Length: 355
Image (cartoon, rainbow, N blue to C red; front, top):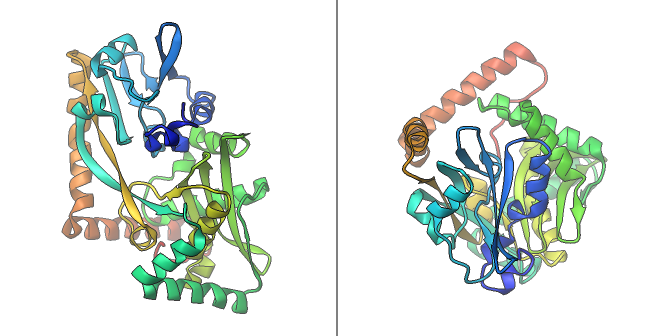
């Protein structure tokens, strides 16, 4: 169903986070993973992956790390959201990256967000031409910094599909350091997330792969990214770089190389994921939409879960959407992260801005 989705009018279902491989890998790391199968006349017509607590609280598969969520179905399939929840013994189902085209779930949408993408279906040259036309200074500066990286550090080399596990460990160390110095929670401090990434790194099928891309300079890695690839979409997930080379903006150079590699593989676009970042605005060609919210049944567990979660989400979204609140909050987190890093390892990391 997913492999044919782009041909049958549901391109949003082509995202690799909706692939069976992602759900199966997560199921090896989290016990509460379930997959509901909807059948008509004995034939499967839809698949609904979810996570369920013993009390019947349901969450989208990979909530917190998945950038695309929903029900994978045949074209034209209709369903009743609350009947589906009842069949799955769920009082509530929470999502934060619901894809477009999931109308029965839209009754529970609280807020919708842009998810920027880089279209490469016309080839990398066409994309780069658009980028130069739309953001000439950004394109010129990024390409010039990559050339300077080659002159100052050594030959720049890009590997689109790096299979060396040591490179993945390097990326995860960089990302953990980035989380800490910016005051964010370190995702890789959660053992199940680290296990999931390793599982996906070793997962390869004709229609899915965990993809590690690395930019080298002078024989050493300077930027890397780990994401998921389906037949038509590269979902960007964990980008990071060595802060010793921050002045060369290696993360931006890496994203351009990734776009070139994705185009060469015949992919349609790179999904940069929800979240307002300056580099995403500069690189993107358009936005998709993803939503967050809850679908609930009339059940005390549903009322309790929503009462507990709604204020937290509302506060976070208010801060993220208002610069007068986000900027000081972001500075405070970075200040706390910097103080924590100085206390832990004052010699290891620089204080350069994130890209």
